[in-house]
Image 1 (cartoon, rainbow, N blue to C red):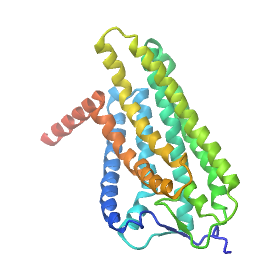
Image 2 (tube, rainbow, N blue to C red; image 1 turned 120 degrees about the vertical axis):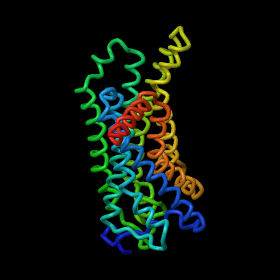
Image 3 (cartoon, rainbow, N blue to C red; image 1 turned 90 degrees about the vertical axis):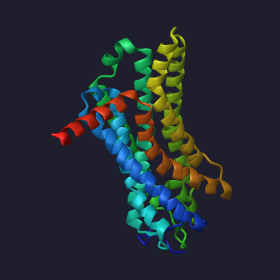
Image 4 (cartoon, helix red, strand yellow; image 1 turned 45 degrees about the vertical axis):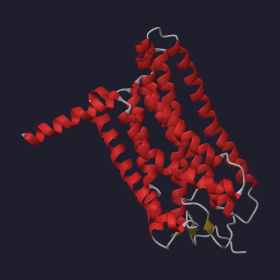
Length: 312
């Protein structure tokens, strides 16, 4: 057996079993990527340039937008090449970098969404103490915890995955180099890697999701205690965008990492993975801009200033 953990590269099969679908997916992925680049860049610029958006909520949103930009750029260009033509290879180094970034930023997003839920919990349940509790120094600390946790997770799990004895055919049954697909590619004992992935899934998926659910349980109780219907709508409106993003993100991630072992589940998991990796980063800016009055107002102010400058 040839040990394919040496740097000889891999074949990313992606959706090659559906050749008629690949060109359609190319167009969908390209449009989604352009929306991701434009939408998230706009959110970053607005949150930096508009003083009214210099608050903890938009600080975390800016982190999420930057994360989505890096996350999608790490694999979508390669994916577009693979979807368009017959060449579907990726070098060992390219696969290693892709796996490292995919793990790191995916983990960071899980933690960051939990941090954003905490921010919304304090805003709704402790509004009078919000500025005191969620101060800028704490925001930077919480964001740093999210980014460092993602880095540590990737530093731990990437090497053990890449050191697996891969089968000679080198065919990764996925559109990106990620842990479940590379474990399936191994011809050796993967017990340790599967245990490692299970533990990571609990710590990085289940624990943050549990904290998010607890936070929104407390938020729901606080909102129901508000007497006026207008007050309830306003309180819920501050959380609805984040709650929608959490639902889209975690439902697709759970479908990928906590799925049963079967060919049907793996095939279905690829489409969930496509939505998680390509769909949610492009939808996040739309959700936060279309459903958020402050962002829409900031955009109108920015467009108005741009128009005045052009007029002068």
